[in-house]
Image (tube, rainbow, N blue to C red):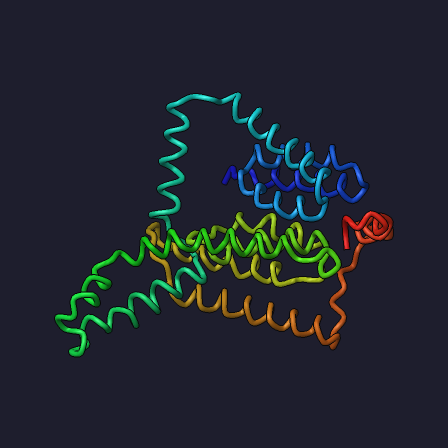
Length: 278
């Protein structure tokens, strides 16, 4: 489909390898190139700042932002900026595809439960209730979820370094973004899968397998989403995620990732004295 997630993944691997070797300036260059490919890696900056607190993190983030502005500056044009703004507005306000939390809140809570208030005799002619029901709750939900996503990512990033590895934090940052997103295409999962390989979690691999079901939407040349696809996909993914969380917490199963002899995990251990990685 000519999406550039393969380039994004290559740049993220560069950033991850340089990070694990302690070459943070080169890691920042890799992440800056990743941001130049797709804007979404900017989600990692709060995590980087927390791990490299404080001045090393500031320098790292400054390199990333400097490279980002430099790369985008090559294409600086007011008309292009306006088109970009319109495209992002269209994405956040109109696009819907394969959502999870968003679909549940919209179609189950708003379209089913919330609409019942319209027909409840007790609320007839109650001014404030009628005013509330007239609000565009769908648009409100679209505006609230990005805020919730940012707060969740900041919460994950603020976790103490000893509680989770940097790679797990990065994986959760991208995963939470997709969980609360209104639109989740299959190629969006690439960064989540990339980071999951360096963690004990395997739910992103199951997610990527089930994501193929979404192409049923285009069956026959049209575009019609099937509700059962989202139910099956996210039901299995969230169930397996809960299983992994519980198994990892109580130690019933060994879900430690299999890594090469000289692995990222060993690199992390060598830097433990710097308290940069758990």
